Length: 527
Image: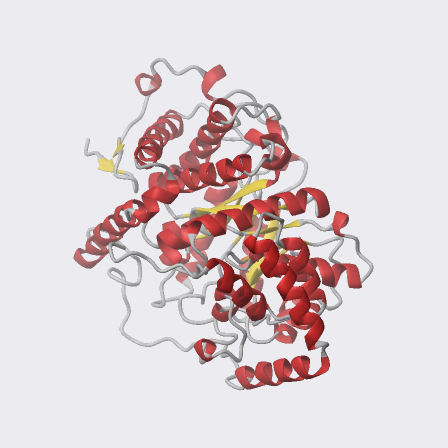
């Protein structure tokens, strides 16, 4: 029989049998659910007690508009919010900055100050809803705004639950929303770890992301390898800063993609848990089992959505969501069918949430833990993906670790090579994309996309003008000076940053103050 290859370029047999698991030791390779090496899941009961957290990634235009969408999602049964920020916010620029022109509110919500954050979460029970924020270089700023808004509503920081992405290394590899040089970025991340341990103990301090590398073209093996290599760099930076591994590692989390190649995706998630458990136990000496658990959020693959025949994306997302669930995700965002065209409409976002609810309540996948355990094909694929990923992690280590490998362009070049091969396969028809290069239709389909109000940029500019006129600007500058001093020294910068934001400093002003001390990252020409 003909054999093919997996997305990672590994052999994919037409038939698997006992010989493919020759020497397989379930006790060592699998263990029990909730126990080392966590191949079968990080919790003993997984979804048999309750399903995963259903998050829906949303945010566009103004804080008021996004708040309305969040209220609708909560009313429709979502258990967790996931905030998308616009590009200026991600890059540390206020909406009235020259470089923000034309981008305000486009790919997410514009948040310039604590005033905007208060509007964003107005009327939402922040002590009951878990909030994930997809923010990296300015993650500390947005987290502190969230804390201040919650405390202003009478909710203590100790009751807040959620996640900040806070993964800057992958920005240098695949996405580009970095601000500061790598060393300073790692210092800021270590400061966040220490701050949250003391002030917001239930918060997940980082979501180490393979998702964006996968969207840029990384294979499943590359996705988990480069993500775990970055995670090693974060853990080492925190240890070097004087933190004990078991004090912060239980709050680490991860973020992966789910593709339509269901079997390899299930294997990928299982392999990632096993690799991370070994790294934390053997390389960092973690003793707390929670430090060895790879807890992760999953988002379905945006890169696999098509603008052609967009309703077909509903099928793709259902398969991708099923892969994430069978792989043991802790939370899930299912993309809306229209995201390849524009920001999701309210109906599309609701259908995306309903997809998760059907998986949770109308199928039997929540009735047993790790249903693929012992499968000839999945166990074999898990071993194969693990071997390929560990070889790539070793290649990163040989180059001096994640940061040095990034500076040499290693991860980026590997991902670009995979992306090019994938694009070639689509162009030649070797890789079938339904509705795009096979089973196409000639007529255009009617679709009315959600459009962002072009006046938002002017509105945000007016809000900033009012804020700067009404606040105590001398107090703002004094607090920013305190933050600059902490950045120049070794103190944790989040404490003076919090007070600057409390005084209504803007996100752009905070980022600019740190740029003055730390500089801005300029990629090498080899990238």
